[in-house]
Image (cartoon, rainbow, N blue to C red; front, side):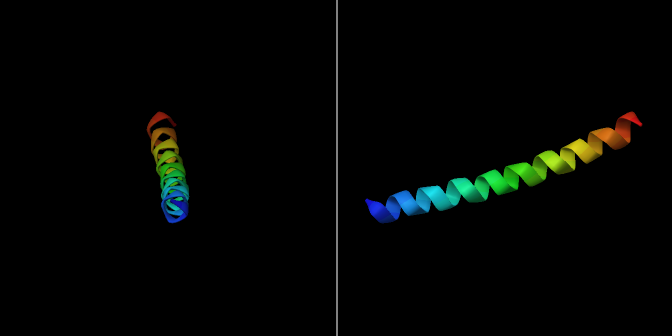
Length: 35
């Protein structure tokens, strides 16, 4: 049970970091379109 929880926490952290990078990339992309 504990190891499952740790794995879930790690995966959600990883996904959050990746999601944030995607958002930053998309924001830069949109800024370049609209300038």
